[in-house]
Length: 290
Picture 1: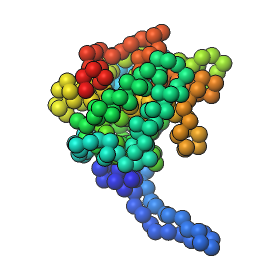
Picture 2: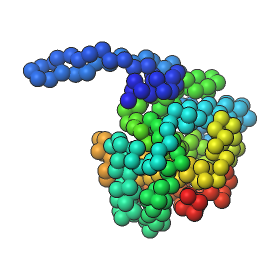
Picture 3: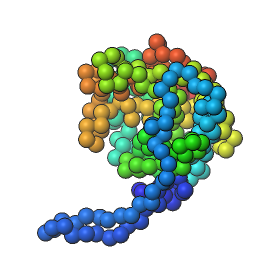
Picture 4: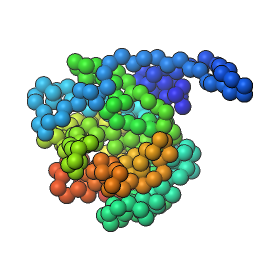
């Protein structure tokens, strides 16, 4: 997967090559690989955590959004449309996609989240993802895995492809939401909540404008509805299950996973105390349009 990522997304993924195997004991060997270093800073170290962004920050941030759109455009062009997107998703998460959505539908802690999971599962089972190309998706597209130039915020690359697998493009759109604000109260006694920047809508518009310029197909209502469905699937998959040392099979709960639930509720538009920044998606409900 690492080699495929480096080929498919070059130069935005580390170059990886296999060096062979090393014997470390009787019947035990390790695979040795070499990986190039992407120079720069993790964006999580630079991302502002204030409600409003100043003018100079906005200039860099809008440029960042356009670079992110380029990454998603590469993903679209590298993928392949199948008659059944579900049958083409054969990785650990992809082959259990509807099962996982069903688990969320039964076990998420709020009725609103369970109903939303049901709607998304039903749309997926009706073939809602079929218009989307299936491609190697980054498995953890969050700010800490986005490497940028410290001064300009020009994207240098994306790291940590350990969880990558073939799924519908658009699944990783949860990563865009992480860039439009910040988590407040994480790790404290306060209830965590995701706070969108006051300029979040402007940043979102910059991303989608650049994305549509590079992939005109997403202007189609049918395709855009499918893309929004993929976005919601990704939000559920990456924030509906606890990591638990990589098992990724326990549905989140309020006692242990308050931060993940805050992401879920806000990104899905179910946190009615949070500001909404969804004008691009108005009128494109995947449940209705697919």
